[in-house]
Amino acid sequence: ELKRKLPDTVTLTVIPTTEKYLIVNDKGYICVDEHGKVLSLKKMKLQEGSYRIKGFEPQTAVAGEEYVPSDSNKEKFKLVKQMIAAMEDGGVIKSAVIDLEDMNDIQVLYNGNVMIYFGECKDMENRIDLAEGVIKDAITNSQSGYIDLRYDGRAFFNEGTTRID
Image 1 (cartoon, one colour):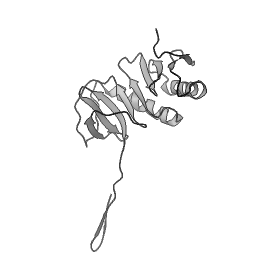
Image 2: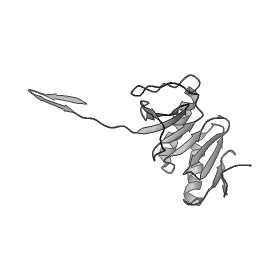
Image 3: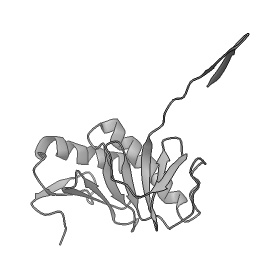
Image 4: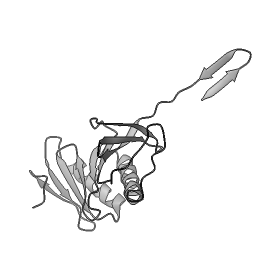
């Protein structure tokens, strides 16, 4: 924001933005803020408040410009924004790795030790609410396991392994 006060004062106010989406690309990550602006292209560690996204087709992006998903990534980016909004509303899952390689088998790795199996992308807000309920009620930071949400209206937690056999 630029303000001018006559005769000789100019005030520039800068509001920093933070990365929200880390879209896995063929060369690292496309870091995008909550407004859809590409912040950088690099390899980096996942920070709290950021979500690493896997399963997008590689595409080019330019830092400082708006992120425009390619035609093959549009549906996935729309779903990612919906999922992250639901996660932020719940306040439990503050960073995660979201795997959209197979849209019929969506998976989220939470806290590095709990895999959440969503299955297909329907009723995502309710499935996220179920997962967050299990996380709050049954999982401590040291527990590992998986939460299976592939059955409508139910969540199952299996401690000890993050894979479904």
